[in-house]
Image (cartoon, rainbow, N blue to C red; front, side):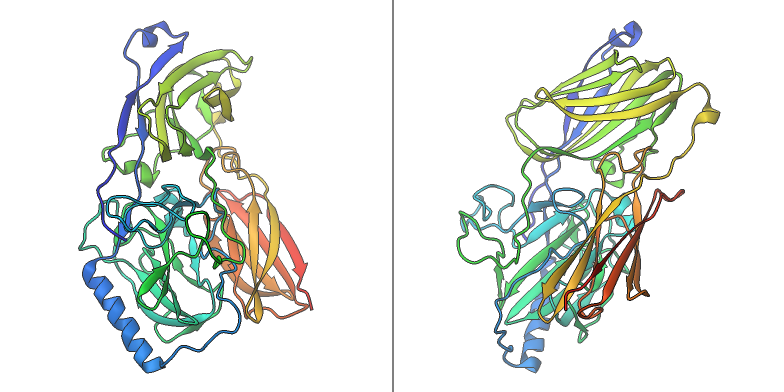
Length: 470
């Protein structure tokens, strides 16, 4: 992980069209389009410490035992769904030339000198709730570190990360970096099974976004586990993680008034009030849209429609610098006269494709503004064979935008039972959780119960059950 320079944030002026003559005659609001490029690194003295710890461990251990089965990963070791609430933004850099880079798929989802896979959660709001990180395979914990600040947004070579290093067998190691402070849940010398929670996602060390850096090493060299046109051979994944390069909305919210952003990275804290109910009359409504994989030269239109479907306000944005943005966060304050009461809609269109159509309510008085609980979710349980056992995945199936009627950030309480015995509970911001290998045996009945909450009100619980194969 090589330290590199940050990509500057763009500030674009929005062009407004609408029926409010007084506002339309001015310059209009300033749209902030944030296009950060995530990079990370390991502090040099911390890297030297880890390398020394691994060598000392190998001296005690002796030659690694040979695993007869191929070395593979049955799952990605972080809670969440890749291409939804997790965004796999950086792979390893397979181009040996300096100042040029290329990932396994012959694209540029990496940067010069990167040595692992970076999977991003959406904001520090989700980090505060908690997003678990799991052991990718059975193994022995070699080294750990905890207690460092975990909300870093500025790169500094002196910043040390919270991390876990695991010997996963057959000469391979898993390096897990940037954990939330106080979350490291394992200790050197401890054996773990696949799916064991080892910590929580954070932004400690040289990091500018809450994420997991997962690195595969064999000996002193890093390994790219994924295969493709620029990295042929056998994949180290049972099912290689999908790479979603299509444009999609990662998150959406509405806020009354303008959102102050005093620093370049303030948007990551996501601490503005979220609502979908506004009092009738003139309002400034700030629309936040977090986009992934924004094409070059995109034409963006934001519209506010009244209950009759008539356009009350429109904002046009042109991104014409010829760049593709894997990450783009739009924060747009829109002044609009909200009348009459009823169900209004906020729409986002990109290059003539309607990408988002989000309802919100306009009411007559402030007394009618009420918090509403999250909507019901569906669940899918999946057994994942690992070694001599199984990890079970519980996946929440819901919308990234409409999971809560007020567009609040939702947390999920997972309750796992094996043969009706409670074996794990965790509250997480992620759309999946795992039950570790070793907690079940063939023919066991496994139940996952999930209760969504916005932190104030809980939505209806959902349950799913499977019986493991003999």
